[in-house]
Image 1 (cartoon, rainbow, N blue to C red):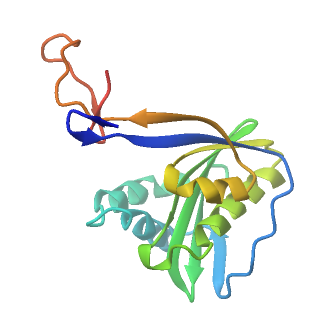
Image 2: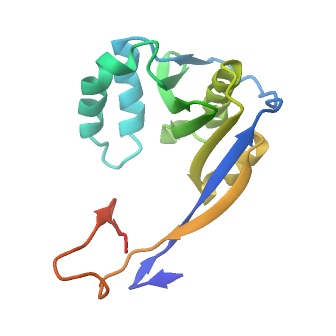
Length: 185
């Protein structure tokens, strides 16, 4: 669907409930670990910033500013980093809130995609939540990742569409909301 000359994108909400995580194939020299020090946090920010073309410099500032909190063991946000041949290539974030874990920012450097690395980062985060006794995990993804999350045992809860509009007639003069280039009515 095209609205105001711009394409609409669809994203999915997913839910995973306690279950047996599928076995993943060995990925050779891939090592996945939780971020526990400033050097790993810088590597994490580098992988995450590389999702944009060009890479997004403010990402480094955010994680550097948040480091005193993120590196505390009691912080509810757990960061995971995947290294392939000792190079940081993938990341994921896990937010722990009571009985639900939110999985965010699963990303793999472009040159390393389609090898199962994103699945390994997702699996590691889910296993961490499961070991903590958290029975449910949720996430949002684009259409491209549907197969990966289905293979890992997630069930689609709903899908929704974002579209861009060139004009908004229903808001009072001078009032608009914008997030990531999408205007919300």
